[in-house]
Image (tube, rainbow, N blue to C red; front, side, top):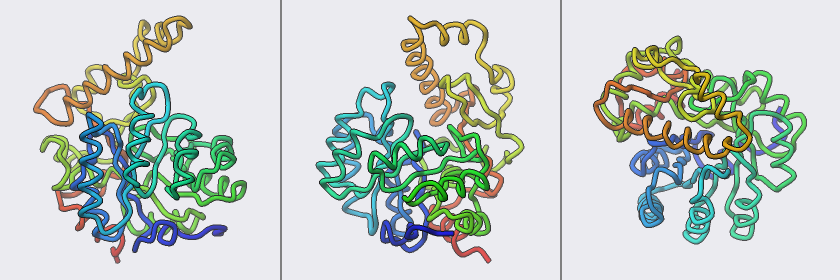
Length: 317
């Protein structure tokens, strides 16, 4: 099945796993623990408020990590900081980028001369072929079991499809919380996996205790899709508050996001407003509990250290 090296060779790590970059959830402590436990860690550049904080974070990880460090960049217009984030990361020599929500062209062009690898989020074959043509080092195939912004196709369909028609490695994202599922993705032809939701309830994560406890208490049946938050469908835990506000945009929100003149601004406003509410829910005691997570929280039975979660994921009998 494999027409490519495994992720362990590509990134020189012990296990073919990337701790997925999670908006608001990932922090430097989690990445350091992940790297030192034999997997790769990635963090969204947007989790650092300023360029100075991003610089400090990268330097802290580089000083304490015994493995590759990845940075996730949102490469579309909703991220005005992208160019500066890219410049800083290239200058400090991160090991790899994960790009989301747009064309990775600028990132690939800046990374190639420095030998920095670029892995691009894709949800379908067409986009996978596009990023391959641009020179991406691998694609991250986001399937319909991913947390946050998920894809439309099941891994059983998406992975073999991309493996068959592309010549670059395929990393699978979504639906992995056990060794059995990890092996299944590799059997389908993936070179490795990107895993996020099972790390939300880690001791090192800085989200609120209530958010972590929700990951323990709720399971895969409690994950719903909401367009209310960022305008783009996003998976959240179906808390009483989410049930109260509903998961669909109302007629006014829908009308405004379809209006040609206003569309761009409304999208940006919805995104920023949504992110503010997600942020509030992530870090503070609020009844407005909008918690982003994926189906694999069904494997979260307790709040544990990152390295223990990794141990269970890779060595589980």
